[in-house]
Amino acid sequence: MVRTSYLGLFTYAAAALASELHPHAVRAAAATCTPTAGGSSNIDDTPAIVSAINACPSGTIVIPKGKTYYIGSQLQFTGCAGCTLQIDGTLQVTTNFTYWNGKGAIIMIKSIADATILSSTGGGVVDGAGQASWDYIVNNDTSYARPYLFQISGSTGVKMTNLTIRNAPSFHVVTNGNSKSIYYGNITLHSVSTSANVAHNTDGFDVGPASYVTLENLHVTNDDDCVVLKPGASYIAARDITCIGSHGLSVGSLGSGSGKNDTVTNSIFERAVMNGATKAAGIKIYPGGPSHGTGTVVNVTWKDVVCQSCDYAIQIQQCYGDTTSYCTEYPSTGHISGVLFQNFTGTTSGNYKNTIANVDCPGNGTCGVQISGLTAKSPSGGSTVLCANTPSNLGVTCTSGASG
Image (cartoon, rainbow, N blue to C red; front, top):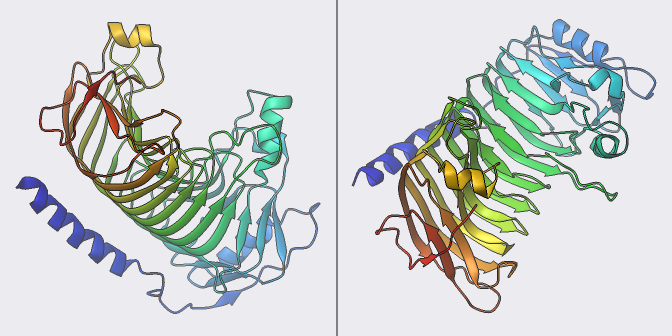
């Protein structure tokens, strides 16, 4: 079948990419530079790090073990030509809301070819001081435009490995601007609010528009999407992932704006443990009508996923981000083809009683979806799959009444 050929080709391409971008395949550094900085939250250490990048454009910039460097302004990699930022200590973001408002990203890797961010010891930390921002948008200024922690835009050959990333004000790691050949591996990400204010919009890894991106050996604890493929994502491989408390392994949202045609293609999620997620896996597409566009998902697979108290094992939404009345008048015009959910095991949370999946396909579009090996159960042993607008060969027994 076409799907088998596609998966074979994708597995080959993903394996080749992973080999090419393996964290140990880093060329020898030309020089080593250690910024003369660190130690005081009143001093912005970003200029010292930038100076070190300029001094060692193809070498290694070292943040020493046991040292804390304070990031009080946007850290850009301009001038890096094969450089390595070796974080064995801590990069600590400051909480200057006036400065960071609308800055886009705290660490910006834009139009760079070949850069590596790693910890040689595994003890390196990048802390975005997100708690202050999560509290600030609730208690002080709801319009505060929180920055991402990392943004890789328009770049190639960027590698990030062996780090702990925590407490981003907003999304943690964003890969966009048609970046390609990007590798993330052995990363622990943790963002959980310690106050009554939820850690909103703390996506773990957002990918798209970008291609040939590999994400593997990730441990993510957060309150939004764990790994999410955004418009323009293609040839993405996400594997060997544990997600705790997240919104799952997601595609979308797609078709948010009037006239938009958002597409995600040729990607795979495999070998994941989803603990306490609102859904283990899913697709989010906006409805049709004058306010929205169209979302297209082609050749995307989720396989070998373990649910541990997930609300849903699988969820497809054709009414994302709008009201039920609007969606009834303007069903989604989205197109889904070659989508496979395979080998989902474990136990749901019971939040939806016996329902383990909610598959609400585009009402005015297409739904090329197959589900196989779905053995996940509710705590009481139920396995109801709610369906709407699904094909006859979906692969599971459907019960009417899907929504969302």
